[in-house]
Image (tube, rainbow over all chains, first blue to last red; front, side):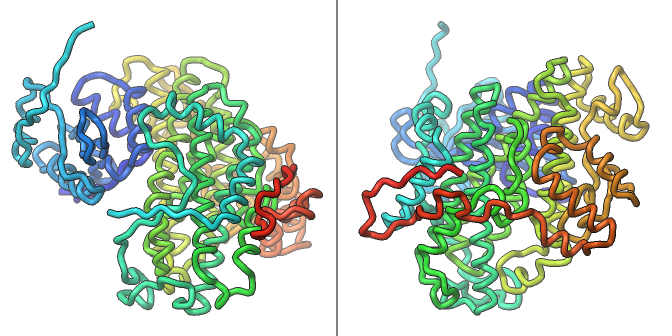
Length: 145
Length: 445
């Protein structure tokens, strides 16, 4: 089994991330990931992490530390996107990415880390549950316009 | 991780602001359009950042494990001279790139790309400021005869043509240069900063983390537009073609490789604990990284050109085209981007003036080689001074009138040595306390 390396996001990862998203969603969306990666690279590239096996990105987790959102004044870590190549699932890649990201959030002064998960995505909810995440009193509200 | 924010003493800070007003006149436009392009992101600040909590002990070399130096007097003479050279070179590149980018910034076809480059320029200014902070924050008089004011003055007076590294002495010819430079030359910057993160001089190591974070976006400022251009080219747009990108890569990649220093060197830096890798090792990694970027751009091109191609099929098609060099699925191999040979168009280091072609083939005759270069480099660049200086030097080396080593030392020609512009002879960027408040005349260039 090839060794896995966790490191910060780099522009050369965009193509691999597009590929992982395509395997998961069956949609080819390079523009979406170019814009997203550019955003995270601009905000804080150390807060966005990828997992590399044999020179190819096989998992990624994008997030950042923000203050002042939703009345949360203290620095809060936000995990916004997680993707693991289906061919590499079952290797604890998500956990390794989360460990690296949460460690960085902590060093950046965040006391809390938050994310939003669709109720229908039970496997993702289970993943965060296994990391020690608990349901929050902060509930999402949506209105169609 | 605590980060301290430091400003230079007033007269030095003012000198950088005056320099900014001359070489970055769109700075105010950047601030005015910040909210539109970078909503909710912290506004740019001209200051130095020092990250606390970096490793306190030397991480490589002969003194590994011993405490890092916290002031210049704790460095030995050799270490101090190497470090001073590195700080000056780093500062020179930061200010130098702004002078290059400003030439063609206004030619951007997309407002987003233009504002990204502008933000990157402001951050390069901050990186230069960070290096000046290292020169003025501590007392270097034990290591150099130059005062802090003179060191800062020397750096701020450099212009395209008098900078320390070759890549920063070449004028930009179009906005393609702005973008390809970010993708290739800023990538070398990333390597240098990452290596200096372990520096045996703690203030240097503390300066690197924030610079590295900002550098990541500078690479995106290059790579993301290149990806978009590759798509547009595949769809038949004529603005930026694959050929234009290829020629810009051919222009900048050799200079990027040379920024690592001579392939035989770098051992002293490792021994002194200033960097963890020798030149050749870092250069090889860099070349591989650029090859990956080129591969990604080709995949992006193929998938835009051949509809409904899966990622796997695109990779297979790319491999086939590279193997056979022919045509497949309506794409000609010649349409794709390729990596120039590592020794192509080199004027420093081991392959300097060896007349190695794009594919790695060698040329015996000067005339044949310059004709080969003519085919592979941008036309506007061929018409410039840098290429002419190179060609004239190569001619002498090829004729045996000059050694390759002397030729390498000669490149680039320092036509605009710091302070050579007429107005600069009477103007100092750094003013004494008594001169504060006096408006500095704008330096022309």
